[in-house]
Image (cartoon, rainbow, N blue to C red; front, top):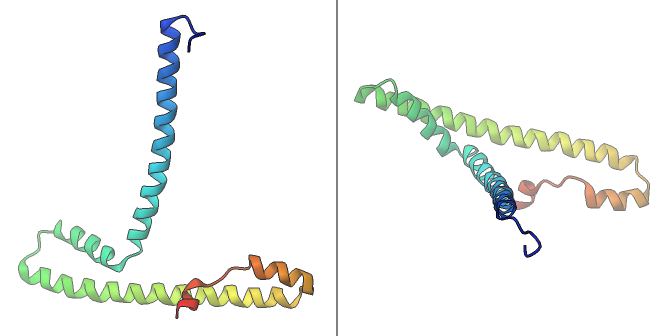
Length: 126
């Protein structure tokens, strides 16, 4: 900074640096928040909360609210079951594809493939 003589140039450079740092920090905060929000959206409790919030816009009576809650609970349960089944079916397809590919590989290729093939973490936890 000692080489820069003009105050205006110093101010412009410092403001530019401030803007670049702010953009970088905002970018990384956005990534973190995005991953938190996407994980939250996978939770069935969030689904029920969102549905209930939308139904409240109808200003239901207490009797309607109870009926809505029962129906929402059953719908959320069905959706959670479908989600689990879908994930299971996806991994079945992946595992079949991996098995078919594995049949075509040489022993050297199998060693490398063993390291890079997709692994079902959920199945390991069961």
